[in-house]
Length: 386
Image 1 (tube, rainbow, N blue to C red):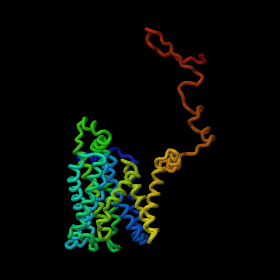
Image 2: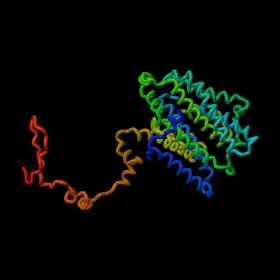
Image 3: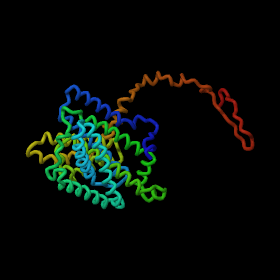
Image 4: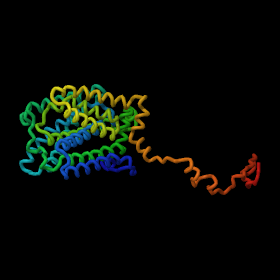
């Protein structure tokens, strides 16, 4: 199965656009950081964008490609944030390098989140629609409540991560996050384009027909759920190494809805859309938090909701479809690459009629005489024929 997932299709540039964009952004920001022109606040914003993209792309596997509604994605992130960061703190007493501790904790936090995804998915994926959403929502609330009351994780005060939190003196965390984003995109895109991805989308389109064709529906549902939970756990580990303390209040129902909004806003089943939407929503949150301090912070959610409503209307209103096409990336590229041909250019075109080499003169007429019972033999061209 892994071989078929990693086996890529014929190379197409459009399938690599997201890799190219992320790599260019990574190189540009790394150069800015090395020269000291990148502020610490912007570095934190890049980390937020990175783990938000991982969350949106992984949830898109469940909601967009599998067609199941999950509202517990923040719960899997909570598992990775608490347990993965706790493991990193314990490792840091033995291993001095924060980067090595982070890499090990990423694997541990992702695997533990995937394990919880298996435990939840095994019974829950027998449900559909709103019932599955309710179960996953309950899981998210139970998980954060449990961590709130465990003494190893600081209870209501949260888990202090000062020992492993990345600072200015350490290796830039956003570089590791962006590299992980590239790996996640590679794995998810190759999964979607493989035969397993076609089986997953077949389940989304018609589960009964997929069963009739011999697709193991339960296996693929559980597989997607576990993979998405693993990536959510990795994103949680990044969050734990980015902030302190890790508070249970962050992984609330509202954050699960925010991740779902990223998926819906970017387009169900669109990986590039999830990347753009996650980046856009993270930047909007950052700007609103920065520009609305004090009592004005209460307006954040109102302005945030109005912006989202405006974006949804812009994406779906038929009246705005021509404007959307003009402003789309594909439309802008076609305008930039289109050649403005003038009439005199067409007249001097080498494909003009008087410059086209032909075997038959234009004043000659081909005629055929077909009679029943006779073998067809084409007549020779007759010069000046009618």
